Image 1 (cartoon, helix red, strand yellow):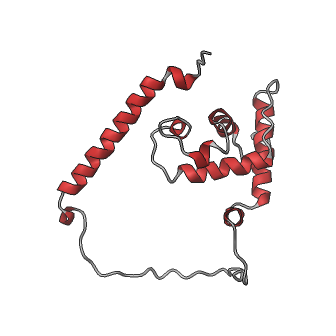
Image 2 (cartoon, rainbow, N blue to C red):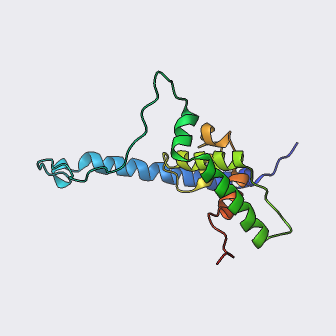
Image 3 (spheres, rainbow, N blue to C red):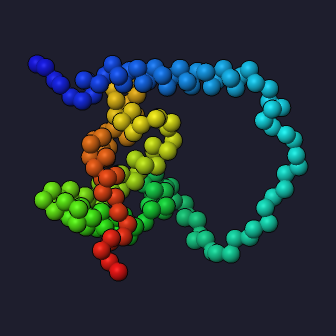
Length: 163
């Protein structure tokens, strides 16, 4: 059986890119080890900022163990997910009515989570998260690369046609 996916066709090119990234990271590590720390750091007294928080915070949960999803929804509420989903689906219909993408709120939540996770890693391109040699399971198991790129392409917050 012969599979011809984009990833298999470009595997030598991708492996070359991975090698280049690894080489550059190795060079940066060598440079940082050989350089003097006095070149970059200077000892000064710490001066805390004087800005005061004027708002109020909700009380911490009492005797409640939070799950990771609880922390996620404390940063991105469900109304925001619904807004992003609705506006993105509207944008798809406005730009390409013959090919609706139909993004669900669950997919939008997954996509936002993927964006947060991709901020942790330093890959030169997003496709590295889904490649066999550099695969990040917590990202690639949630959504396919093509679906992620499709949602990214149509991500919208407001209606372009509203006044």
